[in-house]
Image (tube, rainbow, N blue to C red; front, side, top):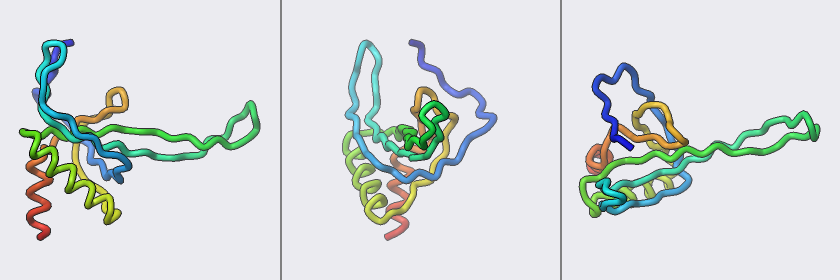
Length: 122
């Protein structure tokens, strides 16, 4: 699959995310493609939907994975720790991206952006 890059962003979407899960990825290569380190935040939205056939209200969930790229594995560790602290403090995380594709969202801001924010809070 060919890698695509944005040439001219005509729009971007701001996401205010309450993370439920965090996963780190180390840099590496898979099937001839190189990957940077990354931190993926998964967020769930739980909602009710009436089921006409059973005449009851179902409780469903929708998940999105937000991937933040990192230059190094050590930055992925620092970013993961920062996000964990934000989660423990019940603070949402704000970032920009495009529309989801396959329940995945590539975040425009990288690890340095969030780590710089963290250092400004001190």
